[in-house]
Length: 443
Image (tube, rainbow, N blue to C red):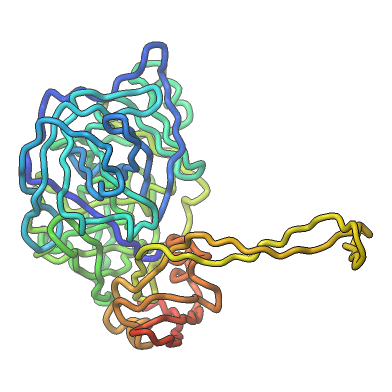
């Protein structure tokens, strides 16, 4: 959620509802393939809810199906609703929501009925502004529990396989199996970290809703000690508020013959994880920055993870060196020039480089483009030292209008292995100001 993207990790304090139907294939169909959107290592797919298509974040770190930001989708109908309270990562209080039953969720060729869906009523809980595309919900265990789910990070495809012996035999030929455990409706794996010159065994939640590589909980075990070279950072946002902590490099992370050198690790503070219901011996999480290096198949039924390395496997681990978090904040009308070329039929003929007679006409069109603003500035970071402030509207980056960028492209600009200079033009209190800073790896 790579530039340190904002990601949302959600742990419900509600009790999961048993007896819900999982996703079942239509007659004669045994495999469904859908395109996915990959942003900051997070996976998004469209799912219809009671006949209305919504965008969902796939998140193995949640038990239930959660909806929010439904202002733009008033046609979604819910039944048998009751008020509840939701609480999770973050240090604030629980928020109000609705529990709704008998919902129908579907992809082309596969459907789930009698689904319980939790609706967040607070419209300020909004992933869309931090991701850069409309995001309406999060789905976890209910999507993964019955079938085999393949996430191909390179080709940006998601495949749902009907559970069976034949499909597992085919996967055995191309993938390497890693044992996992499903506890409290979530997947866990065993690994090791080389931390402060000490090898520490770790049990980690496999959390594709976390864009980072690894999270380690420093107050859970005396073996988890934050390296001396670190910095304080905003790690994300949960149901219960902002998640704060530290970031640092560790020497190595490994699991089942896979080894990653110098990954960036987040160490959330104790107040941010106080509402998390921990399974026995859990030390942290492994997220999308590790998983994106594979094609991954989740087999909850047999407690297996099928992995096949892709071209990203040996990528270096980077982070947001600027210290500034950018978010989407609405749309603006932008005038674009369109050049029209027509054959000339009168005097004043001009020629193109092929000798063809043409006349050039310029027309204008107005299109909606995103507005970006500063959401967070890390203390003592290059962005902070330059004078950037929360709420500044970004007009241009390196002399290029920001509306020409997607949010994920802006994030990539702030990640580099070089000491790159960034030049920003911003609007603050109706004044245009210019700032510059140099990216620097402090780890």
